[in-house]
Length: 225
Image (tube, rainbow, N blue to C red; front, side, top):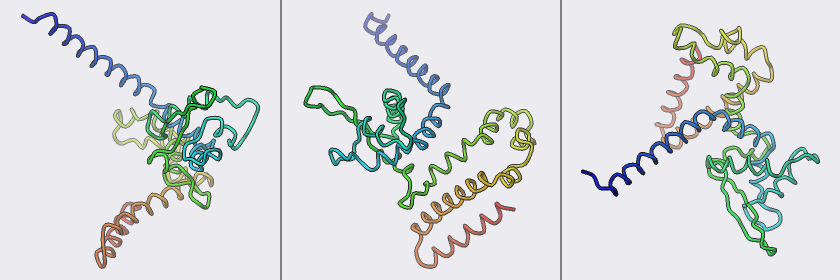
């Protein structure tokens, strides 16, 4: 027979597991909020603003008010509280870092910085977007969003072209007719290909590098047919 302590410990363990499962289900149910937050942060140049650091204390961490003062579009309706909530949300996914400091008046000021992951969303020196930003924009473009919302069709009809079914044309045909989307698609593919190619060349030396390069080109050609 189990003692009261053993029963209490077992119930506590079960409550912990149930609580973890409930939180995990909530995260999955609200999964769309993460890409929405990344999109908002990119449109507001938050990653680039934070990357510049604080102009006041010369550090890598920036306060909410400092970030708000550097937004690309300043209006009297900018909500500091909602901006702070967006930043805290990105911290929860380890895209940003968080710290706090005490001011002379005793108040606590929140400070945000870039995590190693967040740095991939900072624009290049020439002002062009990185592969991470481009790939995110492409993946959650409205034409792709319609595909994600109809993934069940791949199960119900294994031979269906989901993209064509929901957008009326095959993907490459659809992209070809929209110049803005075509440019985004081509830039994204070019950036990702360059990223992988750089890794391949770093992992090989001498003649092996040329062999890997040739093999990669052959794979790309076959994939495009």
